[in-house]
Length: 364
Image 1 (tube, rainbow, N blue to C red):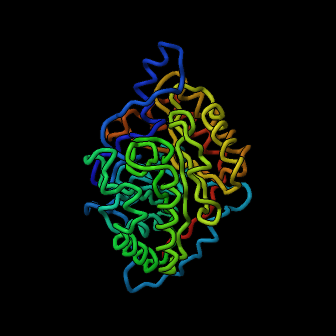
Image 2 (image 1 turned 90 degrees about the vertical axis):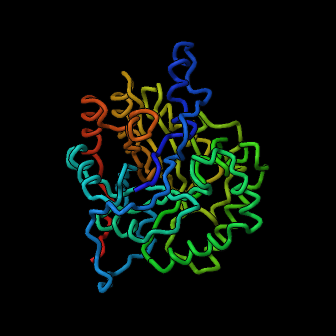
């Protein structure tokens, strides 16, 4: 469970309230409003003791799969992920989402950890116990309460080694746990709303790549081989005017491309996703996972969801998606959930029935 509400602050989410004014002006997809606090979930990703998932006892030694089995899902299979309050720690969350989705159970779960928190192996084990691949969004800051600049977490401090002890301890804990985990490091770096963004007034061009490679070097030195590294920008719409390629560390340092892609006023998935996907494919062919998506309430929501699943089916290089299943009351800034209306839920259920999901093993 995150220790602070996952208020949306990324570019696409920050368009929520802007879109109201923008729509009146008949201008779509520009500008950004701060919804207040929060990371791209804003949470630390730590459990507060409210766990309800039954974990294997320490005396058990389940066979741990190699990360290679997850890197490229079998042809035709996808990841259906969710980011939701109390997931993965409370089993009723994912089981409830499966029920809401008409019986299609998520096989991936995303949660958020900032750099004041250590690695929690129980979160990983809780995810696998529910047949869901864990995606850990690792955020180099102290949380939203400290603001968006946080000079103690500027990219220069990462490059210069100020956080090496923390990164090393985290890397060793990931290695010791052994279970594969996808780590989305410093997401939405092409915006300006996080301390790790080059355009936030604290950092300089070229520093994001250098910081990423520095973190990877520490993990590599520790011999960590159970991480799927996810580099995940925001869609071009809503982000700053910065070259995505200039922020990319290179295929040698990245396993998956991620993407934050939210519908605000658009009625088709392609109108949100295609421009950025075309830009990404100019410099990398890595598999793409939509690491955050959702749609804000409105007449366009159900139609947008209705186009999302056919779009996904026609893009074999897109291996799946993570739905941001948070409401305004839970800190989402808007109700991005697929259950916000009967029409939206029906559209999602129809689309979910078309998914063939990649199997995820559970600990014995």
